[in-house]
Length: 165
Image (cartoon, rainbow, N blue to C red; front, side, top):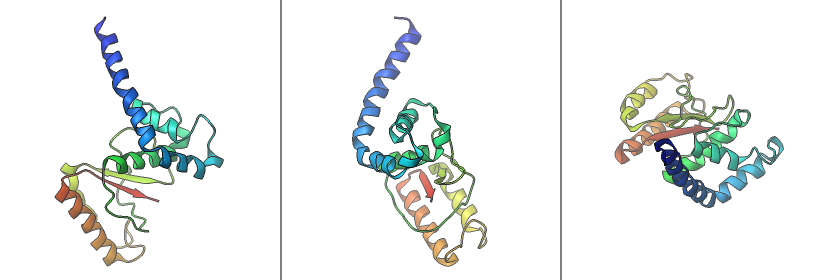
């Protein structure tokens, strides 16, 4: 077999079990997303299509960027740990993800921080003045919450994803 065909075959073998594992593991969450956004979706453009694109490294439906964001969140929750959930509307930085997906101009707003950047981002975010991406509810409490989130990520030595709705 020619080398590039072997590589493609190996990638195909690897991705097929991964997509199937995630479809099973995330079935309830994906079905819930499809139900919730049913007015905005059609049968071939849904949470399962976004999941397949993420696993396959494709972006076939950029018009449903919001769905890619919510599926990204479900994947993060599946492989990671949710350490905080609140009504804070933090838009502390430009949007970023660890894998290429289309980013919604609305919600979810995603900030992904690699473990190597945790301390510098903590310093940057905690030096923000009230009203500059933080403090819409209670500035002092939000700063405490932000420090808690970074403490948890630093202690666990894990990447951090902040989802804003």
